[in-house]
Amino acid sequence: MTSYNAKDCVITWGSTYLTGLGEDMVSGEKDEEMFSTSVGAQGDVIVNEQNNDLGTVTVTLQATSPQRKLLIADAKSGAIKPLWVNNKVLGISFGGTQARIKNDPELSLSQEAEDIEFEFQVFDYTVS
Image (cartoon, rainbow, N blue to C red):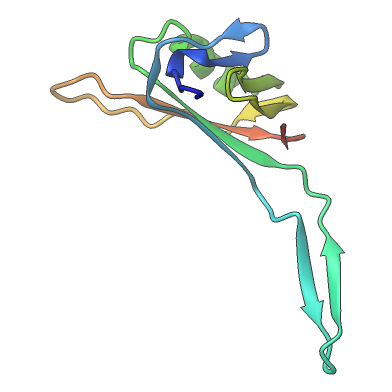
């Protein structure tokens, strides 16, 4: 039997470990399907391979995360760094060697400190 523990998930931005993860932690997906199809008038199908390696990774941090200020500064400067998400217990890894934060995060202040989402564009997104 295998068990899941959120603490087994490690997220690195450049050489920095991201800590203080929010409840939704992290998600990643390829921006475009791996292929498209076209069908001719007589029903012949062509499979068109897509070579778009773009992906999007969303990291959710708590408002008190020590890396919050770094990520906001990197978003403003346009820093490009490796972004990797790994869980060795489950054997999951995704991200890439070149990523950039898409925009400043949406911030909300209310009765409780709310999580902050950072959306990364990964230019060479891969899953293993």
